[in-house]
Length: 69
Image 1: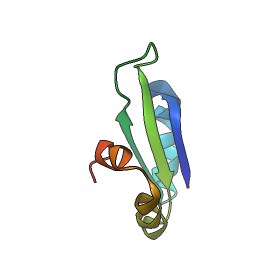
Image 2: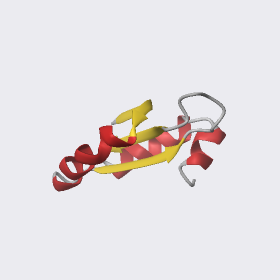
Image 3: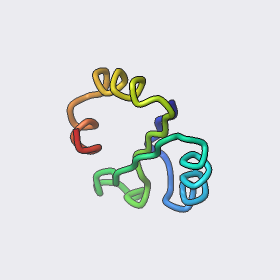
């Protein structure tokens, strides 16, 4: 499981291919555009959907909604 709020689009372009080829998942969403770093993404990468579901329970509501949950 990897979670970061400090990732640029170009950082995950190649990573997405490698992660998905190995059976993993990568989801991302734009951060709120209130800062100078508005082009950064909030990213989660995981291999186990079960682990991701458990992690979602621990995340704040605004983060869950940003990921569409």
